[in-house]
Image (cartoon, rainbow, N blue to C red; front, side, top):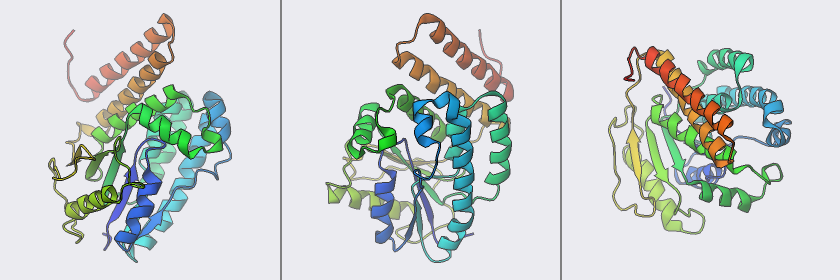
Length: 290
């Protein structure tokens, strides 16, 4: 087990993961591990044609994230606390949203083999935001490959993240609503987040076992809602896999509805959700009422 805490920050594109990681690391005398999006040669093409470039983009990210975390995380934790602006686990979330069929099967086999060698965070901070907030922040940072970002895709990501971290059990999760949280313009906001983390980690002293119960930190009105949770796992890995697949299908349904799709497209998306729900029930050995 590491001697220092490994804190990962997660959330949808544009929510503020990198900014928060950079601001918190010095307060804890720690280091940052930042994801390098720009090195993926398929990324700009993917945003222009997701169906055509999804597999290349996803496999490149998977191998890049593995290469970075497999070596960098243990080395950094030998020196002090580590703040990362992503988790290896979230790679699977994007894959289930963008891949299907044989491509998804190949991805899952590779991800399973690599994930066994990646350490889980001591604490995962999930930054939550509404769609309009996310779109505003994406526009404000104005990355070339994110210009013209599709609202339906971001909404499907947002819904997928919500489902993913509801079922996430590998680490305790601290959820922070960032809709009215300005950690750049309001120094007090960053201080409150920092103190929340110190409280969760045991007043600045790393503890191996974090509280496995809802936790509300007082004095965080601008953060609105913050909690540490550890969801009880579903019956077996198959049930958890089917649950995550269901959340992806619901995310796709949200994207279809937001795009103003026709009746047949909506029916197909609803049918996919129904199939996933039935598969989840079967994996959990539960009979649904008609």
